[in-house]
Length: 157
Image (cartoon, rainbow, N blue to C red):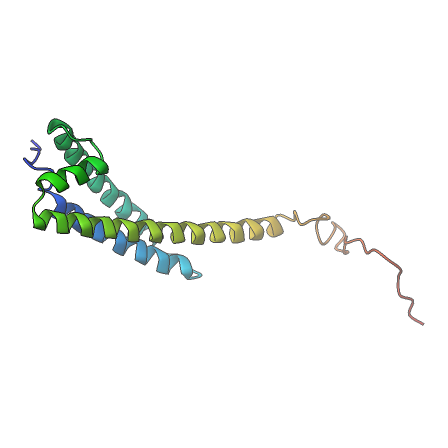
């Protein structure tokens, strides 16, 4: 049976640990995405999904506690609770958690850009391989160039 902690700040250290692991995962993902061979990315995606699930569970528990205590069931409610009842240690953890979240957000943004570039390169390569370049395929069925030239032909004497 999963018990909910008594204070919204009780599991912040565990949340921070999970978020630190996520940041490390995103950093590894960025390295792999920057390489030409992105082997191993599948394992990172699975690990990332597990960490995000864990973090969502912690946040859900915290939000339920906040609501039960009469605060908003979100980060604003947590900040209000911290301002009124949080210990110095809890405030420090909350601040560190917020900073890590900003780092994770930026890493995720950059990784998204890298993924977009990889997808564009892959799509361009697929287009070329499928012979869908503008103006038709480069070579026709007879093996001759099917590219149409514009302008005058040069005469060779």
